[in-house]
Image (cartoon, rainbow, N blue to C red):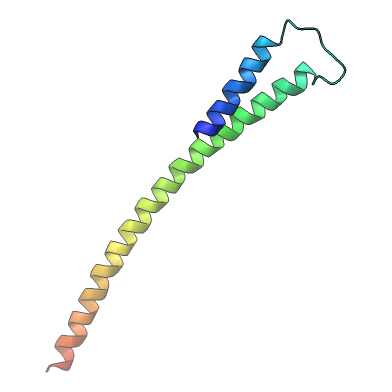
Length: 85
């Protein structure tokens, strides 16, 4: 997350600091750089969203594991009680 934020900040800094300099033939077009900055911001937003979804999935998996453990104990206890009769 911090890497993406740094990259976006770096691009915005470059846009602002080099906007007054004359262009040379190897320079990127401002529109291309702006489009790239927008795409990078979208990727950053997607990463944030995916991180949030991943945290939710991890929490759900933890809940499922706990429920499965409890169910397994109940089943084993019932089998043990049935075999002791």
